[in-house]
Amino acid sequence: MQRCRVSFSLCFFARSSMADEPTPRRPRSWSDIPADIAGLVLRLLPAHADRARFAAVCPQWRATARQRPLPPPPPLPLLALPDGTFYSPPYDEPFRFPGFGFAGYKATCGSRLVFPRDDGCFLVNPFTGATVTLPALSSVRLRPPNAVAKYDQQGTAYPVTWMHIHNSEHLHISKLILCSPNLAAAIVGDGHIGQILVCKLGGLSWSVRAYDMVKNFQDMAFYQGKLYAIANYDEDLLVVNISQDQSTGDPQVSKIGQAIKGEPFHSVWHEFGTMDILANKKLYLVESHGSLLMIRRKIWCWSKQASDTDPEASRPIVAGPNEFEVFKADFEQSRWVKMTTLGDEQVLFLGRRCSRAMSVSQYGMSGDQIFFLDDEEENLKQYYYSTEITSFCVCDMRDGQVDSPLPKASWKRCDEMRPVAWLFPQD
Image (cartoon, rainbow, N blue to C red):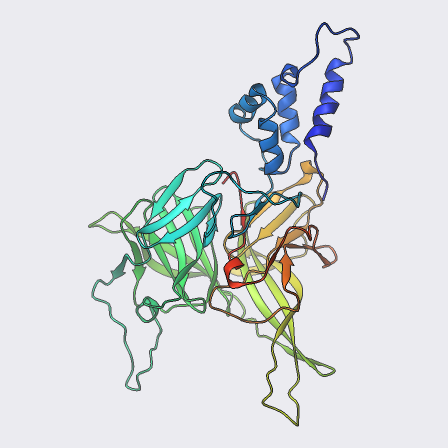
């Protein structure tokens, strides 16, 4: 990843502007550089940290940073850690925002950190300090209002619905999207299964279809004015139709339909010597170049084969290499179409809480790459790791090779650090 240092760029432009003045009358100041030249410098800075340093050079440059809308592509995302630490790739020096500190968030949503509390859910933008308030998870409007948990004669809950999980002590937001000024959508569940809830920004309650079967929802995306979701097993792309409650004016889910019929992905066991190899799977939805993409991430896990002498011995499943497949939604044919490349200018930043596609060509970075995190879900332990320390990794789609480009930008794997996520400054 190419570093784009402020000092080098500024000195280059300073020398260029002074080349035609052999005997300057006074020492030149950074503020003497014309605003349009300073704007060119700004365009070449990929990291949010560099843009903050740019604005700190002098009042004139600070005005340039504020008055000139940052041109696309936006700055690279920050890496947010729940202890209040941030990293600004391509740099591996940690930093903290002044003031509030921003430790203890539970999810991210674009440029906002999500803090669920008993009295509401607060979305705080650390770049501006602005806060958006959503209802607390304890305030949910049922549809129908008199819904109750139902069981068969054997006492089994089927189908399992929101009414069976809403009192779980593990209930949490897995994914949150601000679709519009009047609509927020969230995947809320216990880690294993969940349901889609919607509300109005600043509203008093969420809304849920109480009798819809819960699913292992993996991701959501707001694409071309519609809300889409995908579940783990069948890879069906679901379209979530939103209507308005006639009595309150609040949004509500009117129907969840199928937009694309997927093909169930079956985990495959392989035997290799004394080891069993199993592919675990995670799914992501990302908009890129006007198309909706599904990314299938396979984590190849291994465990020791059962011993004839001790068949009951513990056999922990350990995570191994990652493999990625990318598919584009073909809505006309109702199918997923496999892609072999993202394009030379495009990269994906994947995270369970927030994902984005970005163009990086003007920063001198290589495209056709996927930046990804461990992405463990709260209350869902699917496998263990062979190392205690982790960082973000990059998969090159051209050869499938996976690398860790900034090993110093790392953290310890533990429950408290599970919500590590990408934070996108310009969202």
